[in-house]
Length: 73
View (tube, one colour):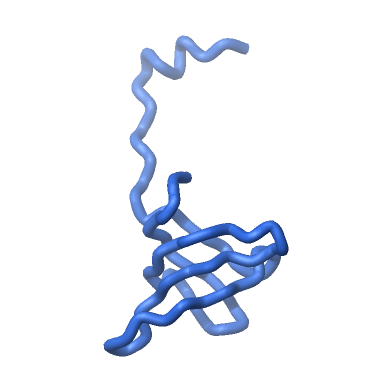
């Protein structure tokens, strides 16, 4: 995933379920750095990787039948 990336954030600690945000960085210390709108203002968030799920906001393209048949096994 290229950064910055538009993501949907799920984090029970903050009650986030599909909150739109921008993933800025994944820190080796085990947390995501995100930019997220709360009300009218943007805020910087640092959420633990172990308690946070991120979903890329853009869905992946469906593979064609030809590309599936050509996968090496």
